[in-house]
Length: 250
Length: 58
Length: 89
Length: 164
Image (cartoon, rainbow over all chains, first blue to last red; front, side, top):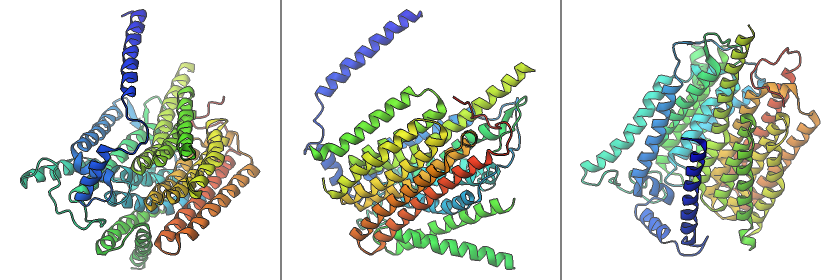
């Protein structure tokens, strides 16, 4: 295909999108407003199932199947990264030199690591009560572990990060989500139905399956992000082509 | 013996502080919150000790 | 009108940061602008009272995205430098 | 729009927006400290908005930013250390930024504590305030240390320093 033809195809496609976009925008309800038919129904359903955070109720109960899809996208992309960024035959690992870090930075990171981890766990476990949930909290937990890379160096991070365990946890989180969904089938509900007792409103045990699915997502996201970053860090810090010298401090 | 004691003490101090922090973060408190908070505090305390050891070994 | 002012400000911030992220070509500088875009988006989401999305955006945008961009740049530049060295030899 | 929301908007306009300009322009020596200031100010904006919207749950966004913001800054310092070493930031300027940060944190968190009244919610606000103050202190220290490590060092070792 010549460049000229390509540009024509692009222009045609762009024009089509522009026309459809304008047509769609003309029919949109105006910004703000006081009528929210979907919102009203979602809030009513969430309250009926004793889930204080309506967004979590939509994500993990009313539209739990969509979340399964999103989780699988993350799982798949982590898998793809692992395959793409693996150590190939013409590459070898070199021990990076330890990096020099200011003592005050080290002290801060050693203090902030457990605090950040706790905040991440708080956000995961309270997804059904307050804003947050498995994804947000999981990313925070994963970030907290990487404070050790900032505070010390890559070798210290590798010491407290058994990568194999995180790979297993990634798969286990994904599987747990599907298994909770399948358990609903056993009790006569639809796949991913909310089959557990709803509990007392605004307590940790409320919302039926929502906290369980939240926790599954939390495990999956934490492990997924750790594995993802591990591949990036390996490539940037340790793995070098055979003719390449690893002179960078980690 | 003293090493084990020191390790246990470090873990205990972190665990108590982090569980207290958890109770400050949450809304209404009940028994389940305490249990979950203590568990999360233990995980974070173990991470704190692991991180310090990873630094201290060098 | 005054009630809409914060949302308007948030939209302006997002528009400015988004345009900046497109216009900046150097990946290292882009990582700064990207983190800025994440912060602006989180502000807009919070102003529209969607804290769940704001939290997601903060979690991903404040540390994770810049880390991945900077690590990739580091790998690519290291490789480029070793290739330059090879040519010289 | 009540007083808290107005204060939040004002801080967004007069605090975050200039800091954002600092993040988007100049060398790393300006961008990195500005990035820390931007996250601190934004965290305070979130606190004010949460009070303005009368939604205590929104405080979680500020809590998250108070730990992730410094993490992001330390990350930039770590991976751009040689840029900071080649062109170190002015000491006085760093001190002024840190002082502005401290003042802003105190000026926002303390009135919010008074408005909240004693209780666990107040402790949570104070925790966020302490985390923010610690975060900007350590960010300044990290930038200073990275700049200091540049002295007595030969050619830049890392691959990030393409000076333009």
